[in-house]
Each structure stands twice: as structure tokens, then as C-alpha cells.
Image (cartoon, rainbow, N blue to C red; front, side, top):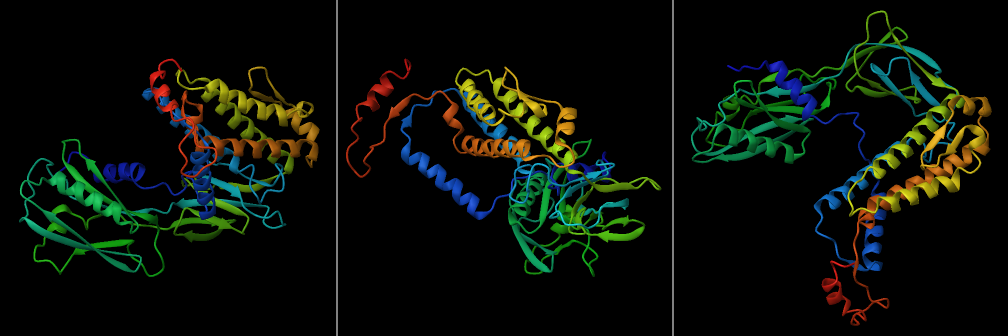
Length: 431
């Protein structure tokens, strides 16, 4: 019926639509979001109004600056968190991170120091792939109201929709995709097109694996509450293309299973299974000593900083004050890295940081001294503060002449600079 194999369809879906379980996404506490809101409100209250030039490229670059700042903060989070006593904190290591990656989440107490893992099968999610239909053809079902039921995680949900005159197969498939995605019930839907131009609706579970007593992650069936039926079979909503399975692996020869590809071992190691291992070739998981952990964290810190400087320096728009942002960031480095050159970490003339891993290892010894840990931690904290500032108000680095000053006394008094509203418009091209 279709020129594309069903395996290709759901593999494409899994890589394109289903959220990556281990994706590096932003996570925020409620208090953090409240602080962001308060910061934005304070800026709006205390800052003057500005005239933004009609420069789409500059505005796009402002968004890019914010994204560069968020990327840098993401790299700094593993270095500068509340639980880490120093940059030399314990760090986990995998002999083959492409198959099994690991992060140390323990508190530093003695425990499992090293173990071997063999992975025979990854946990998979359930994916239903429907019939491939000619997208431009009118739906071959009576016009009217339809519904289907979805059973998932012990709950049942009814999805209602209608088919009207002129609706095509693609119209209804797209409608169902939006309906499922907006419901937020643990399903993700997407469209797939075959080589001969036919389209299908693919539905996948957000979670992988099976809980005890389960055979499927979700089930789709016709609703009995509506006179019109047959939509489930017509679109193939209940056709399972990939069964959900649990991950199967061994720890030091002992077999285990998990409904997720991400789990914790011994309250110390957060394991992420990425690919099956070859038989007889286990992956070794262990911890690095403090010196090696310091080298890795400094490398991450330096690469994050240098990458940010390079990204901002490459902005070509005349509407972006990138030299101002680069200068402010370099000043942060200058104020915190004054005494680190003896350990192989120095600031170059172009504002980038250079470091010598071998010299840092030799000077640090088994236990890195406070003389190098303290300035690096303070530097990382200062960079986090700067990235927060940029994320809240990236327009600060866009050319924007002052349009109107806020009343410094507050209240309902007329603005003493009311005439600047007109002068701002009159001289906008000159400012």
C-alpha cells in the first residue's frame, strides 16, 4: 500500500517527534520562575522607554544572543551547583559513553567504585502507525461527529472531533495530531509521508517500557457514545507498529531490567543506556579522582566561555552592541583569573582563555588546592549571573535610543520629559 516501510515510518517518528528522554532541557523550580518574573517587572518599571529600529536582522541576533547565554549557562550548571563542594568534586566516567553514559550524583560517601555493564536491549516506547492514505482524497466516512477512546496509565480519555464536507484525509489526520498533542495525556502524534506521497498518522507514548501487569502502554478503541463509528479502523489508529519493551542489561553479570533507559545505580551513578553492547565487551563504569575531575570541569568551563565569546564576536549586525557584551564578559574573566596563570589558566589578549591541562594536573596534585578552586568557582558563578542578566533583557545589547524617561517619583504625575516623545520620533534617524 505504501512505498515506505513501516519501520522507516516509526523510526523517523521516534527521532523527529518523540521527546528525547535524555535531551538537555531547561528545568526550573517555581521559585526560579518567580524570580525571573520579578526581575523582568523591575526592569520594565525602572528603565526608560526606547525606540527600536526596524532592523529584523538585529532583533533576530538579539534572540541569538539570548540562546548563546542559555547554552553557556547549561554548560555551567554541572560545574556550579549547590551540591558540589568544589570544582574538583567526584566525576563518573564510562569506558564507552556512546553506549552507556554516566553522571555522578552521589554525595561523595564511599560506595560502589567500579562495575561492568552489558546492555542487550534498550527500552522502547509504543508506536502506533496508521494506514497510508491519499492525502488529497476526501475522507471516505459519513460526515458528522466522531470519537475514540484512549486508555493510558490506568486512565481513559475520550477524543471527540467532526468530519465536514470537503475534509480530506490529510485534514483529519492533521486535526487528530493536534488534538492528541494538546491533550497532554502522555502521547505524542505526528504525520509521516511515504515515498509515493501518501500520509499517515503516527502516535507514540512519551514513556518507554512496561509496568508490571501491562501488555501495552496505551490502547485506542472506538467510542460507544457516538452513532458514527469506523474512524479508528479507517485511519488505523489502533495498529501497533512497535511494541513497548523494557531495557535489559547486566551489572557485574547479574541480569536486570528497567522500563526506562535512564536510572540510578547505588544512589551514586545516574546511568543512561544509549545502545546495546557487543557480547563479551562490557562497559566499565567508575569514578575519576579529584584531579581528573578538575581537568574535565575546567575544560568545560573554558570551552563554554570561549564558545560564548566566539559566538558573540561573530555577530555582524550593526544594530547589535556585541563589543559591549564581549567587553563585559571579558572583564568578568579578568577580575577572577588574575592568579590562575601559575596553574596553566590564563586570559589571552583576544579575550579568550587558554589553559594547559598537564600543568594544571601537575600543580593541583591529588587534592586541588583552594588557590585554584576558589577563583574558578567564583568565575563560574559570575558567568551564571551574567547569563541570567542577558536572558532577561537581551535587548540591552541592541541599538535603541532613549524615547521617554520614566517619572522618577512614580505615581500619576505627568512625565517631566513628555516633549522627548516627539523629539525622539523627530530625531530617531539621527540618534
